[in-house]
Amino acid sequence: VLIPLISTIERVSADGAMVTRFMMREIRPWSPCWIVATGEGRLVVGDAKNDRVLLLDSLARRVASWPLVRVRDQVGCARPEKGWLLMDKEERTISWYGREGVYEGTQRLPRRYEAVVMPEEERLWLFDTGAWVWHEYRAIE
Image 1 (cartoon, one colour):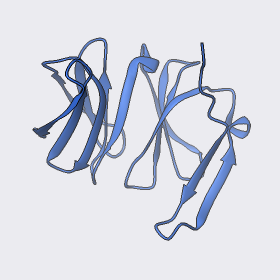
Image 2 (image 1 turned 180 degrees about the vertical axis):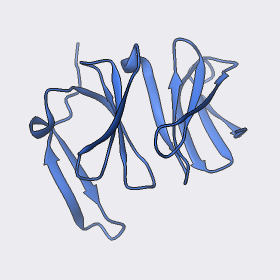
Image 3 (image 1 turned 60 degrees about the vertical axis):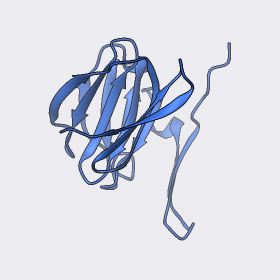
Image 4 (image 1 turned 120 degrees about the horizontal axis):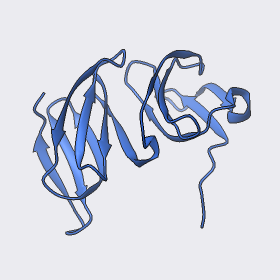
């Protein structure tokens, strides 16, 4: 079994210049299993060790945290200008969160999806592993 290990987080500007970089050992004892970079200069991190979600600023300082059972089963993506969303692959749901982590609701998913991307405010792409294709939806918020 191969388990990916996140050792560094780097923040890079639009022109490719390094803005910040820090080693994961500097922010232990939590164990990140996924990271979402929001458009507001924040990081949303799934902490597998403590079953929670962390909201960090761009220097990895904790802004807030929330408990989330089975955090490692979630797949996240940024919502343009609005926060982020988390897809629960096992429960087949998507939960919507605002900029500061305020829960905004949950929707059921019709198929089995493994990946989610929100390229624009009103577009949602979900990857269907059964058909091996991306489905595009109009995001209903």
